[in-house]
Amino acid sequence: MSAVLLAVFGQFRDAERVRTRLVSDGFPTDRVELTSATEPGRAGLHPAGSRRAKFAQYFRMLLSEDDEREFADALAERVEGGTAATIAVHPRGAIETARAAEILQGEGALRARRIERRRLLGAPLHARQPDRRRLHLLPAVPRAQARALR
Image (cartoon, rainbow, N blue to C red):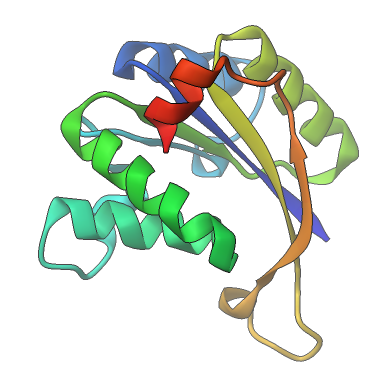
């Protein structure tokens, strides 16, 4: 099983600073993804007709549980509008996961989530399915900010 850490920031420059910090700390650039209106990253590669649809596809891939769809769509809207930027980290092993979580916690993410992934027996890597376990890495966001994230 492996983890993906997803953190939401209010501004592009904050997410860009965190990406630089993660890479400086030794995370390979192909395992740190910044997604924003300024720099869509991998989301920009999705085959959709609009930028918002590309962002929605990307976030739905990461947040694939039924109860997360609304959050993924709201996050896509905020990213397209420039009021949010995200960092997704694909650490390998417990040590990298802990280090990435420590960096994200210390850098002012509005919200962060650890998404557990497991490879289906005999299935190709692209067929990974999320495990139902979720772990919020940061203290609860004040209600006004939480409403803005929805």
